[in-house]
Image 1: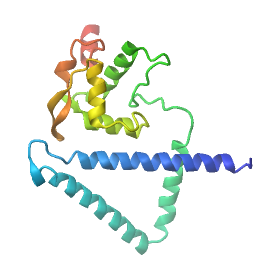
Image 2: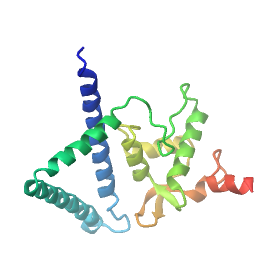
Image 3: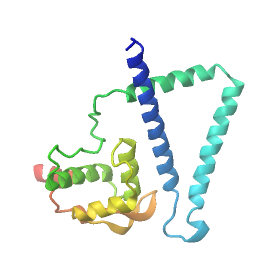
Length: 198
């Protein structure tokens, strides 16, 4: 094995992970344009508009690079830095990353870790949409191959209530988890913990 093979492998792995992460974020952003309170072509008009904005952004970036070719050096450097960081084998310690279940995968441990993750994603909002939970998980390399329907099935199996219609400010109405339904479950909300401590 040559001295360059390890860095090259890290860059290749990181490039793949970065591309997947960016694609997942773009897809999630486009999906959030769908309006569940409308039907027919009006419901997906927001998705088409966001897709057109992405295409326009790509076209403008291409025109900018054609006009200023030296900009490609800056873009390439940025990509290499992002790929190098993403290629690290050490697991991310960010609190924003979905909590991984313990090695023995006890059902109650999985449920507790999932509830903690859901509360993190809800934050101060009224709830969280399943599509946003799934996009966040995919961006962190978790729940690969899972779709919204399968995620809903798993959540209901873990006795985590899912509503057909949850309104989240600025993101419309679709299937999700409402914070009121989580009150009193095994994992308390961060606000409940703060109130108990006071």
